[in-house]
Image (cartoon, rainbow over all chains, first blue to last red; front, top):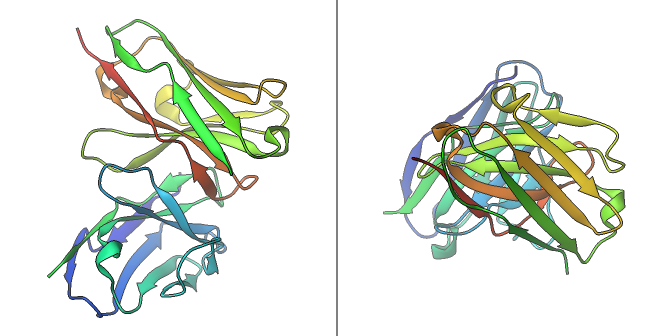
Length: 106
Length: 118
């Protein structure tokens, strides 16, 4: 089974700041990587798929990058509405989620 | 507009069964893989099961294999999850999701709570 290790587990940042969340796969997942945002009390929403493709309607301040086993999600110019938990997911071999990153405002 | 509406959750005793349903609308249901994802209280996301667009192939996480069955009725645009021999560790919110065909989950339902307790 492919394991996904996400870091950090929690993060505190200021409005306007740039934030980066990392995800490491236990083996090469060939860009089969998605990022989701889950706001408190809500369902998860897809942000990024295929490691760097922005899902429909997602603001351009979100971006994804990486390859092989290392991937990252970057949020430019942090907004208050970005306070949420973020999860990575591999879908190269079945489906596995990372443990999540809780993003709060400083 | 894509909509996924789950139903069938509730409180159930350990060892008993429950069947979840997910009514889909706003897209051609038979063109997409579908999946169930769960989230235990205050925990992360956990993939549970997936089914191909025709229903011909199904996939399960090890902890539910032999106990859960995913199925679909394309004529009714409805996804199901039959859960048997339920355990306390199955307690979670269960989400119905649309799969971009063996890849990312691009739409999610609002979720339905399943509590397994005596």
